[in-house]
Length: 83
Picture (cartoon, rainbow, N blue to C red):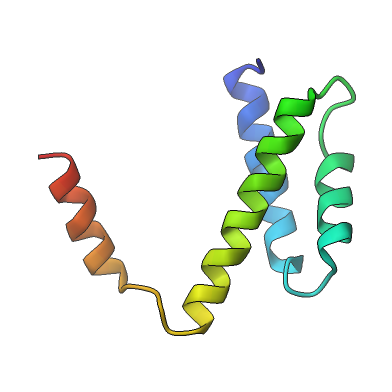
């Protein structure tokens, strides 16, 4: 498994990938994500990244369809989880 530093680097790379998700094909998104990973990446890490990209895209589609919840409501729900 990667160190916390590597995970943060993945997150930084993801931020540069996010704006392009609706402008490119799924294939292009996956290839870009894999190219940005270190050469010693594992299959599991690649699968986690692809799954995360899919979940983000699904969330964006839900928001575009008006199925999201306001930020304040999300914060309220999260606060209840921690009680």
